[in-house]
Image 1 (cartoon, helix red, strand yellow):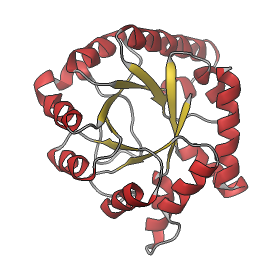
Image 2 (cartoon, helix red, strand yellow; image 1 turned 30 degrees about the horizontal axis):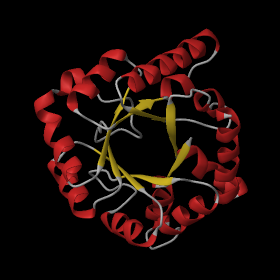
Image 3 (cartoon, helix red, strand yellow; image 1 turned 60 degrees about the vertical axis):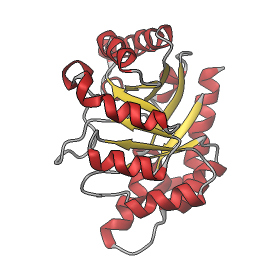
Image 4 (tube, one colour; image 1 turned 45 degrees about the vertical axis):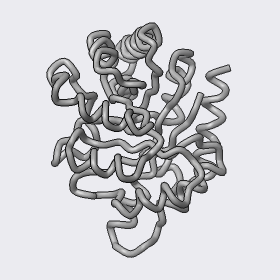
Amino acid sequence: MRLGVNIDHVATIRNARGGKHPDPVRAARLAGKAGADGITVHLREDRRHISDNDICRLMNEVDLPINLEMAATDEMLGIALATRPNAICLVPEKRAELTTEGGLNLLTQGHHHLQKFIEEPKAVGIHVAVFIDADSGQIDAARALGVDVVELHTGAFCDSDGEACKTELARLGDAARAAVHCDLSCHAGHGLTFETVTPVAAIPEISELNIGHFLIGEAIFSGLERSVARMRVLIDQAAE
C-alpha cells in the first residue's frame, strides 16, 4: 500500500509569519526519505498554505510523484495543465472551510460540469481522481465520468466510535470493493492517525492512503521523519 504525505500545513506554518521557513520542499524530501511514496498538496483559491511557487519547486526539486488536490475551476485546471503533476484529485472546496468537509457529490455536480476537468488532464497523461464519500452511487457516477481513481473520505470513520465506527469501516470496505469491481483504483484519506489507520490499511482493495495534518502535527513532538516512518510501519503491518 502506497503512502502519500500531504505537506500543506508545513506551508501553513511558514505563511503564519512569512518568509521561507519551514520549507515544504524540504518536508517533501524528508517524507520520501522516511518511506512516503508520493507527496500530496492542495492548492486553494485563497492560497492559505501551498502556493503556486511551491508547486513549481516540488515538481522540479522532489523526486516523488506529486498529487495535486484541486477544486474543479478553470484557474486550477490551467495550473494543472501547465505544471503536469503525476495526478490530480478533484475535491469540493468552500471558501470559509477549515478543511475539506466531505466528498464531492458526483450525482449533483453533473457530468457536463466535471467532464473537462477529467478529460483534459487525462489527455496529457495526468491521472485523475475524485474525492468522494463511501457510497455505491458515487462509485457508479465516478465510473461513468471516466476517472482513473476514487479516493474515499475517511473522516466519518475517524470521527466515530463504538458501533458507528464499525458501520463506517464497513462502508469503506464495501465502497473499496465496489470501486475495484468497476475497474477503478481506490485510495483513501482524511483524518487518519496512528490509532485509526490500521483497520483502513487492512482493506485490501485500497492501494493508497493520503495523510497530512496528523503527521505534520506529530512532527512537532517527534520529527517529521519519525512520524512518517511510524505511519509507514503501521500501514505495512496492517496490509500484511
